Image (cartoon, rainbow, N blue to C red):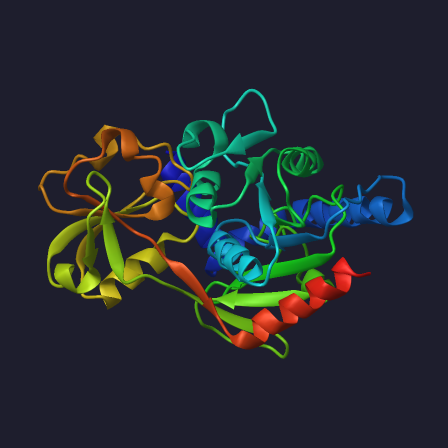
Amino acid sequence: MKKSLARWVEDAWYKEMYISAWFMPLSMIYVDAIRFRRYLYRIGVKKKTKLPVPVIIVGNITVGGTGKTPLVIWMVELLRQHGYKPGVISRGYAGTASKTPQAVTADSDPSLVGDEAVVLAKRCDCPVVVGADRVAAARQLLASNVCDVIISDDGLQHYALQRDIEIVVIDGERRFGNGYCLPVGPLREPPERIKQVDLVVVNGGGELLEGQFAMSCQGDQLVNLLSGERKGLSDFKGIACHAVAAIGNPSRFFAQLAAAGFQCDTHVFPDHHAFTADDLRFKHDKPVIMTEKDAVKCRAFAQANHWYLPVSAELAEAFSQQLLTLLKDKSHG
């Protein structure tokens, strides 16, 4: 029932469904509420917390995945190469830890701290702290680690944490859906919010407007969940397999496999789904291919035919230079 409801909502947001218009008054109320909330922060009724190091927000204005986490991983490596000591904070979405903020390692339980946070800790090799209160998470990060810049994976709408640089990631294929805010459409904030951020990244193709930067997420090897063995995508070309995804935009993952020559039976689960062993038991014993975000939740019951596809973000040098220039200005401001 949940999956069918989620698909219905997605169709209403990204396809032509006039039934969405029935909920337009709710969307108008939502927009008024978020604009009023921003106004309260702007005039100082709601307080912002300024940290002693620059804060970079990597967020989006739509519900669901746009590619923020691969961009954060890429940025951590870029900043480290240029002498910075970055740390990462995240909400820890879908985590059930009773106490937050909480430090995350590559071995942390994703059911407690969230799947994306475990991927960040595994790939970034830098301090990672999760917590719904971004200010508290950032303070713990600074108290326990030597960091001179903080990257927030998501949190564009968490205005209590004062930010120095805002980066918005857009899904290049789905863009803004029908262009309406919740609940009529997928937007968390009106499209005009894009004009107020420092950098706009478009993931996965699509139209680039002036000043926007293209990003692609590429992976050419599969990793076995059980053994850690790596194989090139070409080794699986033409082989029948199962592809599972519990991410915001599973069609992008499935299309990537299809483009590599995979012949997949696709299985969609709700975003951040807590996998069980039964979820990955299929009638035919074919390879099961999943995303890295899903793989961290399947380690405890991994089988020899379970593989995941790690991806890395790719961006133009122009984006690197603009980001570094902005950060240098903020660090000395």
